[in-house]
Length: 163
Length: 163
DNA sequence: TTTCCATTTGCAACTAGTTGCAAACAGGAG
DNA sequence: CTCCTGTTTGCAACTAGTTGCAAATGGAAA
Image (cartoon, rainbow over all chains, first blue to last red; front, side, top):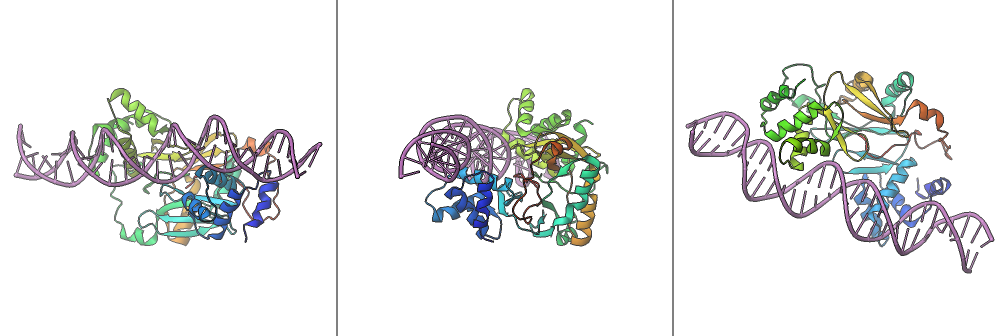
């Protein structure tokens, strides 16, 4: 998959093909991992004199809107981006050891069905980062120090930023 | 439910009961909606001379960790907080008109089961904000302007920050 | 009641990301 | 090829949130 494949997508959708956008897309396309906005800037600037950070964020926003790129927030205080590739996947992130694994695209199929059928809501359930405990950390952790009443909380600690 | 109920929770968990923490918890407890960190600061300061923003963020992080408070990121560039109350709920947010509705706590039950059984992963699936299109906006929108290949994308636009 | 120390606060400097606006420019029309 | 206009960029100032550190303090122990 070469980034030039996508350049027509841009123009066809009525957007302009600027060198900044092309370089940014190229950099993301050449990487097979998750890149932060800052990493993308750095890589582009190796080849292209200067590039403003607003342009990077605005280009990323556009690519995400067009479905070319997927953003993921792993809760490290910065969002990462990767090319959208099929088949889709979700990320399972262990809150204790940080280990990351992948889960199938169809994980949320029953949720999607329920939301459509019972709530008449068409959800966007692409590509989530799901926090929790991996197998190893479930075993090692004694953690659940019971609370006075069983009322509050499902138990799992919920970290800050999620969507 | 009065905020003093929770003060023992703090101490029992080995944390100190400071006036800042008490006032912050009280403010969240007295509100039945979602408050931003800034709104919380403002409300506390009406009663308590001064309060630093670091203290607010650190207190909120603690309350979230203890399961007293739920954070939600509605994608407006700031996280909101509310008391954790049972029964639980999730938020459905329309990406076009912004309308917000609630969904049942058990929405993710099948996902949780699958992750436990097939991935040996214990997820924290409390209290999500799910983006998509509400019934009205599904009807009104012609939007899906077909793409060259059916390959990429589930269709739904994925906004920036999600977890 | 006083002492003590780990925890917590305030502060200031920092990072990630956003926004409004003027200048630059992609790309279509003449 | 040149002109034109709406789009996009660069910039600077801004917001939300984080971090390291010194000073203050909750609360346990003497």
